[in-house]
Amino acid sequence: MSSNAPSDTRTVHPRTRPRIAALTISLAVAGVLAGNIPAAQAATAQPRPTHHAGGLQCRGKGVDPTAKIRYRTETLIKAPLSTIWKLQTDVEGWPAWQKPVTGMKRLDRGPLRKNSQFRWTTPVPATPVSPPTTLVITSTVRQLEHHKCVRWTGPAIGEGLRIDRGVHVWTFTPVRGGVLVRTEETHAGDQIETNVPLATDFLGKGLEAWLHDLKTTAEAHTGDHRRDHR
Image (cartoon, rainbow, N blue to C red):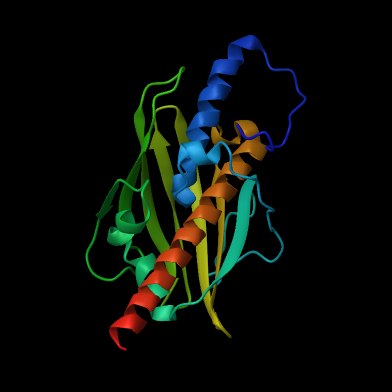
Protein backbone atom coordinates (compact mmCIF):
# COMPACT_ATOMS: atom_id res chain seq x y z
CA MET A 1 0.00 0.00 0.00
CA SER A 2 1.27 3.45 -0.85
CA SER A 3 2.36 5.52 2.12
CA ASN A 4 0.22 8.27 0.62
CA ALA A 5 -2.94 6.17 0.49
CA PRO A 6 -5.88 7.48 2.56
CA SER A 7 -5.50 6.42 6.17
CA ASP A 8 -8.17 4.42 7.97
CA THR A 9 -8.24 4.70 11.76
CA ARG A 10 -10.77 1.94 12.31
CA THR A 11 -9.60 -1.08 14.32
CA VAL A 12 -9.16 -4.20 12.21
CA HIS A 13 -9.69 -7.58 13.83
CA PRO A 14 -6.60 -9.81 13.40
CA ARG A 15 -8.63 -12.48 11.59
CA THR A 16 -9.65 -10.04 8.89
CA ARG A 17 -6.17 -8.74 8.14
CA PRO A 18 -5.12 -11.53 5.70
CA ARG A 19 -8.32 -10.99 3.68
CA ILE A 20 -7.78 -7.23 3.50
CA ALA A 21 -4.12 -7.74 2.62
CA ALA A 22 -5.11 -10.04 -0.25
CA LEU A 23 -7.67 -7.56 -1.49
CA THR A 24 -5.14 -4.73 -1.28
CA ILE A 25 -2.63 -6.58 -3.45
CA SER A 26 -5.32 -7.74 -5.86
CA LEU A 27 -6.57 -4.17 -6.25
CA ALA A 28 -3.16 -3.15 -7.50
CA VAL A 29 -3.67 -5.59 -10.35
CA ALA A 30 -7.27 -4.52 -10.71
CA GLY A 31 -5.92 -1.24 -12.03
CA VAL A 32 -5.57 -3.17 -15.28
CA LEU A 33 -9.35 -3.16 -15.56
CA ALA A 34 -9.01 0.53 -16.13
CA GLY A 35 -5.46 0.70 -17.40
CA ASN A 36 -2.10 -0.89 -17.22
CA ILE A 37 -0.17 -0.16 -14.05
CA PRO A 38 2.04 -2.99 -12.73
CA ALA A 39 1.51 -3.96 -9.10
CA ALA A 40 5.04 -2.90 -8.18
CA GLN A 41 4.43 0.58 -9.55
CA ALA A 42 1.02 0.79 -7.92
CA ALA A 43 2.64 0.38 -4.54
CA THR A 44 4.66 3.57 -4.99
CA ALA A 45 2.56 5.69 -7.36
CA GLN A 46 1.15 8.91 -5.97
CA PRO A 47 -2.62 9.21 -5.62
CA ARG A 48 -4.30 11.73 -7.91
CA PRO A 49 -7.46 13.80 -7.54
CA THR A 50 -10.85 12.38 -8.39
CA HIS A 51 -13.33 14.45 -10.38
CA HIS A 52 -17.04 13.79 -9.89
CA ALA A 53 -18.82 16.86 -11.23
CA GLY A 54 -20.62 16.58 -14.58
CA GLY A 55 -20.17 12.88 -15.30
CA LEU A 56 -19.05 11.91 -18.81
CA GLN A 57 -21.64 10.50 -21.17
CA CYS A 58 -21.83 8.64 -24.46
CA ARG A 59 -25.16 8.90 -26.28
CA GLY A 60 -26.80 10.04 -23.07
CA LYS A 61 -25.44 7.26 -20.83
CA GLY A 62 -22.73 7.62 -18.21
CA VAL A 63 -21.16 5.72 -15.33
CA ASP A 64 -23.11 4.21 -12.44
CA PRO A 65 -24.34 7.20 -10.37
CA THR A 66 -24.80 5.00 -7.29
CA ALA A 67 -21.33 3.41 -7.35
CA LYS A 68 -19.12 4.14 -4.35
CA ILE A 69 -15.91 3.75 -6.36
CA ARG A 70 -15.54 6.38 -9.08
CA TYR A 71 -12.69 8.18 -10.85
CA ARG A 72 -12.42 10.63 -13.73
CA THR A 73 -9.41 12.13 -15.48
CA GLU A 74 -8.29 13.57 -18.81
CA THR A 75 -5.25 14.40 -20.94
CA LEU A 76 -4.36 16.24 -24.14
CA ILE A 77 -2.93 13.98 -26.83
CA LYS A 78 -1.03 15.64 -29.66
CA ALA A 79 -2.03 13.19 -32.36
CA PRO A 80 -4.77 12.87 -34.98
CA LEU A 81 -8.17 11.79 -33.69
CA SER A 82 -8.17 8.89 -36.15
CA THR A 83 -4.94 7.52 -34.65
CA ILE A 84 -6.18 7.76 -31.07
CA TRP A 85 -9.56 6.27 -31.92
CA LYS A 86 -8.01 3.31 -33.75
CA LEU A 87 -5.68 2.52 -30.86
CA GLN A 88 -8.48 2.65 -28.33
CA THR A 89 -11.15 0.74 -30.27
CA ASP A 90 -8.90 -1.87 -31.87
CA VAL A 91 -9.05 -3.83 -28.63
CA GLU A 92 -7.24 -6.83 -30.06
CA GLY A 93 -4.17 -4.60 -30.35
CA TRP A 94 -4.16 -3.57 -26.68
CA PRO A 95 -1.52 -6.14 -25.63
CA ALA A 96 0.96 -4.45 -27.98
CA TRP A 97 0.93 -1.19 -25.99
CA GLN A 98 -0.50 -2.22 -22.61
CA LYS A 99 1.90 -4.75 -21.11
CA PRO A 100 -0.36 -6.11 -18.34
CA VAL A 101 -3.04 -7.03 -20.90
CA THR A 102 -1.80 -10.56 -21.48
CA GLY A 103 -4.81 -11.92 -23.31
CA MET A 104 -7.52 -10.44 -25.52
CA LYS A 105 -10.30 -12.07 -27.52
CA ARG A 106 -13.08 -10.43 -29.47
CA LEU A 107 -16.32 -12.35 -29.00
CA ASP A 108 -17.68 -11.04 -32.30
CA ARG A 109 -16.29 -9.70 -35.57
CA GLY A 110 -15.90 -6.40 -37.34
CA PRO A 111 -15.30 -2.87 -36.07
CA LEU A 112 -16.12 -2.21 -32.42
CA ARG A 113 -19.80 -1.22 -32.20
CA LYS A 114 -22.80 -1.34 -29.89
CA ASN A 115 -23.19 -4.81 -28.32
CA SER A 116 -19.62 -5.83 -29.26
CA GLN A 117 -18.00 -7.99 -26.60
CA PHE A 118 -14.40 -8.75 -25.74
CA ARG A 119 -12.75 -10.80 -23.00
CA TRP A 120 -9.31 -9.89 -21.71
CA THR A 121 -6.99 -11.14 -19.01
CA THR A 122 -4.22 -10.02 -16.72
CA PRO A 123 -2.18 -12.13 -14.29
CA VAL A 124 -2.32 -11.64 -10.54
CA PRO A 125 0.99 -12.63 -8.88
CA ALA A 126 1.20 -14.88 -5.85
CA THR A 127 1.14 -13.17 -2.46
CA PRO A 128 1.83 -14.41 1.09
CA VAL A 129 -1.91 -14.93 1.53
CA SER A 130 -3.17 -15.91 -1.94
CA PRO A 131 -2.07 -18.09 -4.88
CA PRO A 132 -1.34 -16.70 -8.33
CA THR A 133 -4.45 -16.29 -10.45
CA THR A 134 -5.75 -14.49 -13.52
CA LEU A 135 -8.24 -11.67 -13.59
CA VAL A 136 -10.75 -12.21 -16.42
CA ILE A 137 -12.63 -9.14 -17.63
CA THR A 138 -15.63 -9.45 -19.96
CA SER A 139 -16.64 -6.13 -21.52
CA THR A 140 -19.77 -5.29 -23.51
CA VAL A 141 -20.03 -2.09 -25.54
CA ARG A 142 -23.28 -0.35 -24.62
CA GLN A 143 -22.90 2.91 -26.53
CA LEU A 144 -20.51 4.09 -29.22
CA GLU A 145 -20.34 7.15 -31.47
CA HIS A 146 -17.58 7.10 -34.07
CA HIS A 147 -14.64 9.38 -33.19
CA LYS A 148 -16.62 10.82 -30.25
CA CYS A 149 -17.21 8.36 -27.42
CA VAL A 150 -17.52 4.76 -26.25
CA ARG A 151 -19.05 3.22 -23.14
CA TRP A 152 -18.71 -0.39 -22.00
CA THR A 153 -19.67 -2.39 -18.94
CA GLY A 154 -18.84 -5.76 -17.43
CA PRO A 155 -17.52 -7.82 -14.52
CA ALA A 156 -13.92 -8.71 -13.65
CA ILE A 157 -13.43 -12.02 -11.87
CA GLY A 158 -10.40 -13.74 -10.41
CA GLU A 159 -9.54 -15.77 -7.32
CA GLY A 160 -9.38 -13.30 -4.43
CA LEU A 161 -10.90 -10.44 -6.42
CA ARG A 162 -14.31 -9.76 -7.90
CA ILE A 163 -15.72 -6.58 -9.42
CA ASP A 164 -19.39 -7.27 -10.05
CA ARG A 165 -19.99 -4.30 -12.32
CA GLY A 166 -17.57 -1.93 -13.97
CA VAL A 167 -18.79 0.94 -16.17
CA HIS A 168 -16.27 2.81 -18.30
CA VAL A 169 -16.83 5.90 -20.48
CA TRP A 170 -14.37 7.52 -22.88
CA THR A 171 -14.85 10.78 -24.83
CA PHE A 172 -12.65 12.30 -27.54
CA THR A 173 -12.84 16.04 -28.31
CA PRO A 174 -10.69 17.77 -30.94
CA VAL A 175 -9.17 20.96 -29.51
CA ARG A 176 -6.37 23.32 -30.50
CA GLY A 177 -3.14 21.36 -30.37
CA GLY A 178 -4.61 17.87 -30.36
CA VAL A 179 -7.42 15.82 -28.86
CA LEU A 180 -8.74 16.08 -25.30
CA VAL A 181 -9.32 12.52 -24.12
CA ARG A 182 -11.50 12.14 -21.04
CA THR A 183 -12.31 8.96 -19.18
CA GLU A 184 -14.45 8.02 -16.19
CA GLU A 185 -15.06 4.66 -14.55
CA THR A 186 -17.05 3.20 -11.67
CA HIS A 187 -16.75 -0.13 -9.86
CA ALA A 188 -19.40 -1.81 -7.74
CA GLY A 189 -19.61 -5.04 -5.74
CA ASP A 190 -19.55 -6.27 -2.16
CA GLN A 191 -15.90 -7.32 -2.18
CA ILE A 192 -14.48 -4.33 -4.06
CA GLU A 193 -16.33 -2.00 -1.68
CA THR A 194 -14.59 -3.45 1.39
CA ASN A 195 -12.18 -0.51 1.30
CA VAL A 196 -13.58 2.27 -0.92
CA PRO A 197 -10.71 4.79 -0.53
CA LEU A 198 -8.13 2.15 -1.41
CA ALA A 199 -10.14 0.81 -4.35
CA THR A 200 -10.67 4.34 -5.68
CA ASP A 201 -6.97 5.08 -5.32
CA PHE A 202 -5.95 2.07 -7.39
CA LEU A 203 -8.68 2.69 -9.96
CA GLY A 204 -7.29 6.19 -10.40
CA LYS A 205 -3.74 4.93 -10.82
CA GLY A 206 -4.92 2.48 -13.47
CA LEU A 207 -6.77 5.13 -15.45
CA GLU A 208 -3.85 7.55 -15.28
CA ALA A 209 -1.50 4.81 -16.53
CA TRP A 210 -3.88 3.87 -19.37
CA LEU A 211 -4.11 7.50 -20.51
CA HIS A 212 -0.33 7.88 -20.28
CA ASP A 213 0.28 4.86 -22.50
CA LEU A 214 -2.43 5.87 -24.97
CA LYS A 215 -0.85 9.33 -25.23
CA THR A 216 2.68 7.97 -25.56
CA THR A 217 1.71 5.41 -28.21
CA ALA A 218 -0.47 7.77 -30.26
CA GLU A 219 2.12 10.54 -30.27
CA ALA A 220 4.90 8.10 -31.17
CA HIS A 221 2.85 6.80 -34.11
CA THR A 222 2.27 10.38 -35.23
CA GLY A 223 5.99 11.16 -35.07
CA ASP A 224 6.85 8.02 -37.06
CA HIS A 225 4.26 8.91 -39.70
CA ARG A 226 5.67 12.43 -40.10
CA ARG A 227 9.22 11.13 -40.47
CA ASP A 228 8.12 8.62 -43.12
CA HIS A 229 6.65 11.44 -45.22
CA ARG A 230 9.66 13.73 -45.17
